[in-house]
Image (cartoon, rainbow, N blue to C red; front, side):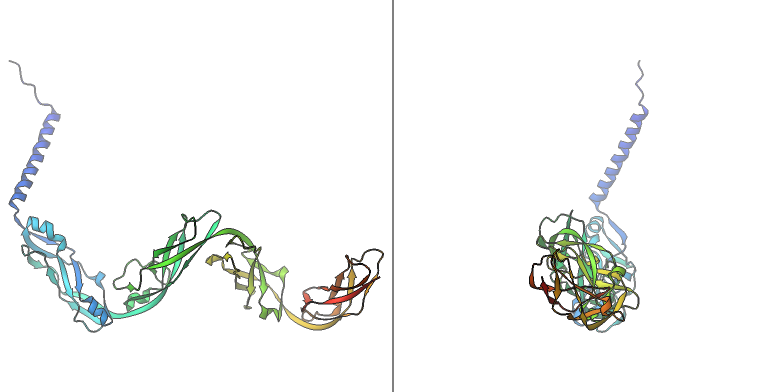
Amino acid sequence: MKKKPSKTRTQKFQTIVLSILLAIIVWLLVIYVNDPNITTTISDLNIRFVGEAPLREKKLAITGKNNIHPLSVTVTGKRSDLINFMEHIYVEVDVSNISDIGEYKLTGTISIPTTRITVEKENYSEIPVAVEPLTTKDITVSVKQTGTIRNKLVQSVISDPKVTITGAKSEIDNVSGAVATVDISNLHEDKTERVSYLLTDASDNLINSNETLESTRSYVDISHTIYDEKTLPVIAVLSAELDNDYILQNDKTVVTPSTVTVGVTPDNTSDLLIARITKIDNDTVTSCALENPSGMYIPPDSREIKVKTELIKKAVAQMELEVHIENLPDGLSAHTTENLSASVWGEEGKLTPENIYASVDASELEKGEHTLPVTLRGNHAGFIGEYTINVIVE
């Protein structure tokens, strides 16, 4: 007789695995068909506070919810019921009867959605909460841009940046402002969009969670305007008030940064930016705001310029000046009918007729009497107003 071929090791292993799977299936069928009663502990129960709306009407708010230790409960019921209703078992705490600020220890009630589950043991004691005064605060929402558009700048403006928030005093005190973040990289035309914002603290860090804060609205409307990018030089000038008493030494003035990239409309022809000095600090470095002409957008982080300069005390004097005739064509002679009486400004202590040179340009003149504008040259000097003088050419 021939011997039966023996099973290979692989066949034996497959038979064992199949037997184990069949045993598990049979065991599960027995359990679910019989649906036995079991006792189990549900940990980290959800807590639901009832009566917070009436509490807020009393200008009070519950805090400290996140500091409550995890609660658990031991229950008994059919396996299927526990599987179906476990997520709906929670602790309910009624706070509607609280009428003043302070620390409270409250009792909770287990809420179970079916009578087929019974509570064996509540594994927690009193629930500690704090009650704070409910306060309000007005905050300003700012815009944060992400992304860029090649050779373009985008001005993003919130139509109504003021938002009122309400909440427990400790949380309200922690809020300094809010930020709405927008991605401008996909903008192709001017548009307005509605954007949600996030609260920030005094260090501009995002406040990612809170227990009591509510706001009048959760969004802001932001208008985007696209400008052509242009880099312009910056010059410093004195304000009208300072210009009455001081002279700006341009050769000793340093502006930082010396150029600024701005956005301009097609009809804007500006070729420079003006940083107007409005005050004199104890040191020689002054912060100045750039003037923003029509049709231009200066990004917020570029609007302040540092100016290092030295000022000279200004003096004003009435002077009789000889006017020099320059560039007279060959073959002609010329003279003025009189000296020029003019108001002149210059450096205090150095404002004398010897330091002032007044002249007219006679390059285009022919014979006859002419009225010409007078120009003045001098170290840190100039006319107050405009002057002319009569010149006779012969």
